[in-house]
Image (cartoon, one colour):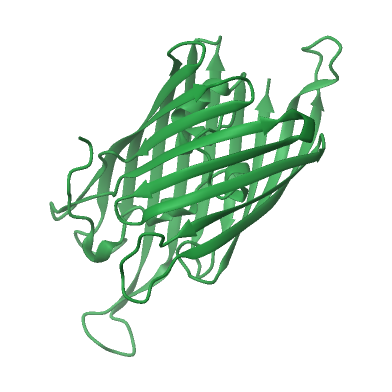
Length: 314
């Protein structure tokens, strides 16, 4: 019922294409297989129902090292208030640079240059439906500015929905609907609809192997099916090694296109902080530094480096 056939932005380009870069040091290195993710501030982006796994307060900041003068910064906050209220705040700031060229016709020199910037803000809430079921939502505000280009800037409003079922402490199933209805309205009164993305996935932790595996089956109106598989292994309590793969263009019908295999990897280092909150435990608070290397979803054949810092205060 939530998937009517809307017309997308001209040329098939998403108004918020930068969202395809994803967020979070751990989920990114695991190929974005995050529908079953819990206990992470990036759940507000991937599946807001996962915020019910947060113990106290968590914050994360990430920078993506983009080419061509582009910038992408991400910040998130997740909080658990007395095991009753679970909430999150996510901010993304993207810029395509300030040296974009405008032309009214074919010419060697541009008529002018301009800048493009986009900002996304997500306010998330989650709740426990029972001891095993949890749900969540994210309300979205999207801002797009094309500098001096008249009537080209826009404002978007929308939401995401999430649901999770926790089989036990080690296994979680998740279902997320990203942008079931998110619309951009531009200064010239035209509108465009962001394509809906659905994610179904499972995440399983194997204690004896000190590892976690995750699998998502993702579908979007414009990109079709994209399976995602990720693994995480802790050879040491303070070191995480991650890897993953996702398949693109699996159901594409365009001329000359064929399925593509995209590999991801990353490493995380945990820095424990001294705390006396739990008797007999040396520390409960921690800072994690995560590096991820992923294929650039906007520039074929290029790799994207991302660095994230996360603080978990139990």
